Length: 135
Length: 403
Ligand code: SF4
Ligand code: SF4
Image (cartoon, rainbow over all chains, first blue to last red; front, top):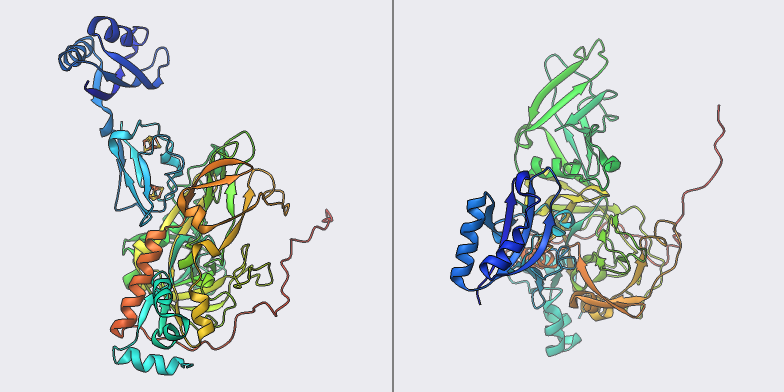
């Protein structure tokens, strides 16, 4: 079953709407909330993983766009600036999903974007400012 | 058969020196045995790259027209304050200096995005740096303030001078408390959430010459991508600590002070560094060649990660309170595996220093020597070693009279 990680940004007028509920009930999608930042009267931000049939995902996305939710794939958000990275590994013990990991044979550090849930724990940990989250 | 540095240099000049890194030497010795390896190998190269807070540079900026006496005044490079208590147009910039208006830890944890280390990196990268100074004016130095841009290419001198670098071994930092802490050893998660270490282990210079037999004052080294020298022992040099059979200290021990022309260095090996909640600093790349003069010197260079032990220290209490307690001993093979066990709990390890860059530095230095671009120097004086009776002193605690 296809899976997608998405960042949903929605205006304050939609903050009290049960957005994930619609996705589940009307579009048969499984929704796993990875991060939520929803404050009343402010713009809301949800990081979710959805899985379901391809056309259900599409109709769900269309619905979100129609009600004014901005949908972006999650992987676009965290950027690893490889040229600034010194391969120290400081980020690897803190990353909960092992998106950052050490290849033990040569101690080099790699970043698997698709594993990243944009929790941002690595951002203040990197001594060389080699990771950034872009909203 | 013992060799001399002069003999090794003759071979280097002819392009005939046999040079290997401190990683490669282990396979060679396993294959050939110590005796044969000691006679065949001329130089073993080491390397390290990590945050080294006791780093700095001094610059001579040349004289403005009319002249200004910056000495005794105040001066800034990209808003980072520099020390002006030397001469008229010499300034000294330290890696941990922060702009006057940086909030530091007032907004906790402080971000420390830009400090002295970052200025040094940008200077080496050839960027223009904004210089501003105010002073009091004299008959011979009438100007009282100045604002301009300086560039490493057109100032008289730019010298990297680091009073303490290249620590021989270092603690592993953990956090026993129930809150996250921000330290110079990085961010430490509560309840033994992670463990941070900071040494290149078997590649690290002073761990390959544990008693400082060949590394001494005047030793020519790889420094920040260029050539530098060991100037003195580093501050807090503490050779008389507990050591294993092979001479390797089990706790932080020796250090070196290093110096070199900043103009020939490389910004990728002098990196401005940010330790969230702690401060700004500079990460420095250092490589030291070890001439294989005797079999014993060779044996020291064959030290492996599993033979190098270090202490696990709680940075939520033991370290800040200056208590000597440790939570046990681990070796660098365990640290590099990604997991260690502390108090029965398996915890993830990570390094603040880069093993990849340490290896690159040892490789680069090896290639310089092989090509004849880098000659070894005879050191002119020894670093204090285990006979020195040096003891590590705390700051005296005396009540200060209020006047
Ligand atoms: S944002 Fe979180 S999940 Fe992504 S790489 Fe950083 S620590 Fe790992
Ligand atoms: S902490 Fe930063 S510099 Fe170190 S490996 Fe991770 S991304 Fe690279």
